[in-house]
Image (cartoon, rainbow, N blue to C red; front, side):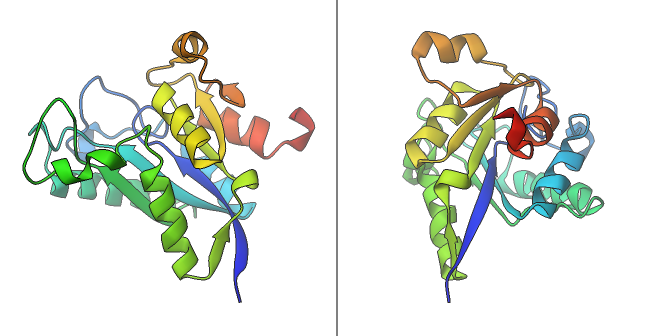
Length: 198
């Protein structure tokens, strides 16, 4: 029996954790943005599945290894678990068009703003008998590519002003998010979980 679920697709760097200006390569460099874990916990309690969707081109560039990226993702889950907010699935794209790599070029088409990682998550959830209700699902990120990815995947995009804060660039390119929030906490608590604000 299939079950309908709503999903929060979340960018990582600049959305959940602080953007340090380069690729996060160790647990020491990974710092949660204030109250991000509380917000994710509240969304999970409200019935949302949590899926991380992140470009990690530092792998193709030789700055970080897949093992380092996976360890940091594990660390994120450990931090979230302290608030009963662990994510359900996590996808990362190691490729970058400007840095050809024989091992990672095959993944170029999964790089945001492509919706391929979202579609993979939808397919993987379906294998568990879970059908993603796209009209009730959101994509939250700090860049134009996150908004565009959400739009292309048919889910509702929210831009946060943390990280790169590309609000002006979104307007310039006419890639329009449904909502713009100061941070992940405000996006979830002040918008997604507050129907009165919509």
